[in-house]
Image (cartoon, rainbow, N blue to C red; front, top):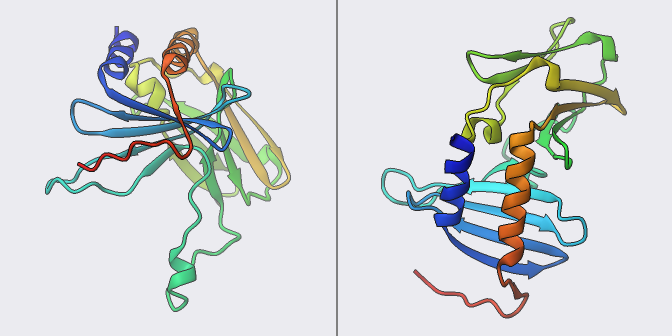
Length: 203
C-alpha cells in the first residue's frame, strides 16, 4: 500500500532533529537525494512548516519550496528597489493544516461567499477554486494524498469566507490521520539537539 511505502521511505531517510524557538525541526535526506524539512509546534505537536529541496541536473541544490506554512517574505524587493514588486492586494495562497483537515487560506479575496465554487478534479488529482464573476481561478493538488495514492472526494471539501479570506478545508481520510500519528511517534523518539549544540558537519 502506498501509505506504508511512504512511511517506509521516511523511516529509511537520514534524519536530524533540532529543538529551537519552541519548535521541533526535523530534516530528512532521502535516498534519491531529495531533502524535506518539517517544523512542529512543541506544545501542540502541530505541523506548521513542510518544505522541499531538490538538486538540479547539475547536482546543485535549488531553493526551498514551501508545501505547508507561511510563504517566506521576499527579500528581493528590499535589496533591489528598482525591480517590479508584486501588488500587496493580489490574492495570497498558503496552506495551514489543522489536526483533522488539510487547509488553505487565500487572502485578499473580497467577493461574497456565494461567488465561490469548489470542486475536485479526479483525473488531474487536484482541487479547483473558481468564482462565478470570473475574477479568480486556482488549481492545487494535495501532495499528501498523492504520495499515499489516495483518491480525492468532493464530499471532503468545504469552505468558509471571512475578512477577505477564503478558507478551504479538505477532511483528512483515516489513512492520513493514522500515518500522521505514526510519523509523530517516530519524530518524538528522535533525540533533538537544542539550539546552540548543533553539530554542523560540512559535506
